[in-house]
Image (tube, rainbow, N blue to C red; front, top):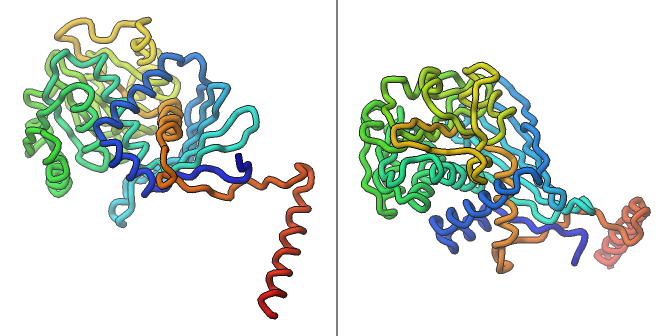
Length: 355
């Protein structure tokens, strides 16, 4: 083992992993990793993400550890970036060994976050949506849309999509991108039209504001709502009245009460943690007419699972690189000596080049 190098997964490496695995198969595998870690929820350190808010967006750190491995993700959310041709969300993350503190993986996580968010949404819907759900409304057809659609097809068999976005070009792009994945796709003129006949409604809009993407009259009995877009203070998508007549499921209540749809409710409003449903300690869907809502804000354990998955799946060397990232002197106390030896090497190289 070379102690000074860290395995690095670039954007190109990540895309190669997705393509070689097949995105549907990868999302199924990734959801299994997330479910495994949710089943051992008590093993993890859990804190709300550390957020630095600005006028244009937010920059966040998301750490967790199971006592053996430590993971963190750096992620931003800047809705106005799209106007400058930039991504709304970018991310990278690291996985380290707790006993030494040495990092063993540094990875792009812009693509990986989209994958893990979709895998978590579909995993939750397996426990919360009606059996046999096949039709999903997708309101907000930005960067997350195709990942969500494919995850729900892979895990639940959803094959009928109803798309709506205030930007028709976004809907058209999403429609094109999904053509080869076996969906029946309907492009809709409004959110109201999109939810007609939907078993599942996914909201994934980007604006950092309290919006009403779903109003109370749009939600009939038996629907499962996958609320993805509300993920920071002052950013919501679902009308409060819908929340009051839904059974609400969350990842980590202290974080979701600040950032999720339930920031609109009283601090003691009852919610159910998803891990407790997965481990059969609490009920998920209990009857056909029940309205269920997954208030998804994203939690660090999901990133831990995603990094663990990537580490296990890297395989061939062309899916990774090695970065000279950790200063590792021959004598651990002689860090300055490394500088002196490098200085001598550079002087020798310079002298040789003049000969």
